[in-house]
Length: 211
Ligand code: ATP
Ligand code: PRP
Image (cartoon, rainbow, N blue to C red; front, side):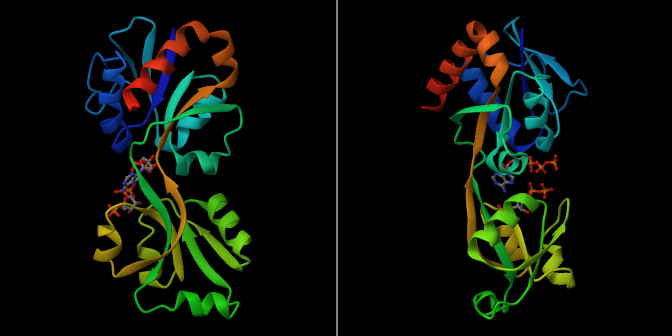
């Protein structure tokens, strides 16, 4: 038996058709079911439904053998104990620095000003600004990052941008790309050795489905 950790919402919506193409069909709709462990059309594969940010943790500790998580979440987690063999090319977006329209980001950076940056991606943001030699005070938020520059909590945010609609609706503009993001398959390294006979065909089928 292998378990695949998935999160509800965007990633699940895009992942279910991919799993189906790989011959794995959920026995009930995880988006509407209150069940957290869901059987599939394959007796040896089950789905575990967790928060997006918890997917790498379940897989790292072997509570799930496989998982599907965004590159943003994986970068924050650090990837310890995880094998990341496949970019699923789903839930694509970009992690960006954004500021209030009218705020001169380039000038602030040039002057060596100390920027206040609000984000849920503390680790990734810290590395990004350190590599650029920009001094920042990071403020951890758990959502609605766009509010931070509008309320004076921060000068800038680091957040995901896809269509750009959320930034535009809040009079913010993206000024710098931090990373390109997509969902990836992750596998517990020990499980990949011990359960290779079951995991490898699933990996192969998903690889074909992505293509
Ligand atoms: P939680 O509900 O646990 O706080 P979340 O709100 O981050 O998690 P989702 O919004 O479903 O969960 O996002 C899951 C993943 O989808 C993110 O980690 C990211 O990789 C990707 N994602 C998030 N927002 C977008 C977007 N606007 N466009 C494309 N992909 C996105
Ligand atoms: C994500 C992200 C942005 C938005 C960007 O939020 O945090 O707010 O999508 O997408 P856009 O560029 O297409 O507007 P999400 O919709 O997942 O809401 P959340 O903050 O509740 O996770």
